[in-house]
Length: 159
Image (tube, rainbow, N blue to C red):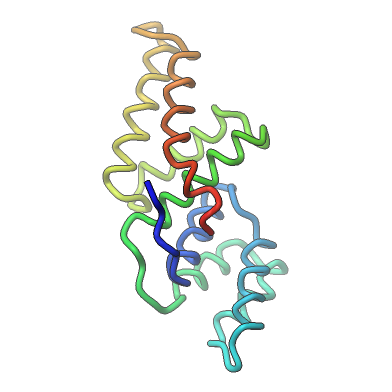
């Protein structure tokens, strides 16, 4: 997979998904908005609001990120999110089971593309079956999830 260059809308959606999962923080959103403000002679007001979002609730930042104008590249923001999850796992910043729980929770809503949601839910099904001793082991399910994340490695540095 060779990732496309993200648009501002893609980056905003990545950050929105990242905030929903706890994979990104408000300080990252503010830093991203600051780069836009510095690059533009007259940036849209939404970027100025995002620049100070570290002092407000996450829900405000989520709402502002959804208002970023532009065209979104299908699936790119979600792929960037899974790439970030791979990087966090690779850096031992998160436990694999914690990342899986966060992404699977997101997959149960309308936040991710169908393909990605289906993949994550099927992999999580392996965990449930292992926990209930129906088939497989937790270690096997975690290995499958780690392999799935690794397929998104190219997206880890694309943002």
